[in-house]
Image (cartoon, rainbow, N blue to C red; front, top):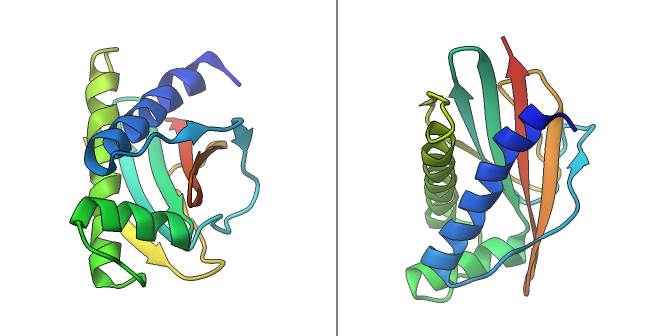
Length: 158
């Protein structure tokens, strides 16, 4: 993996851990970084957001398994959540925004000026994740007690 990918990916991973620790009192454990070859999501609900800079395009996808997003939602909302409904979909969009905003702040400290799009949330078993950039898709699995979720970052120099 090239230096630029690590430089771009790590702020998203750090931000994801910060958001879940702060908002849901959960400490996700990152797994091994890998390249993702296919468009099929690893989870049941995915938040996707595009990012643009002076000489790059990137996108972030955060894909949650059903048990994980139900637990995160329950912790954040303070009530039992039993299905992926409109409230959970909205929450995934908000989590995607928070993670990207945190990463944007970290990246701006490194000299990156980044614009963000509005997140899109896709649900369903075996749904497709279409990134806005056309570069390698780096995926990091995270584990929590109820299961796994996945952070994907796709980066392209333009």
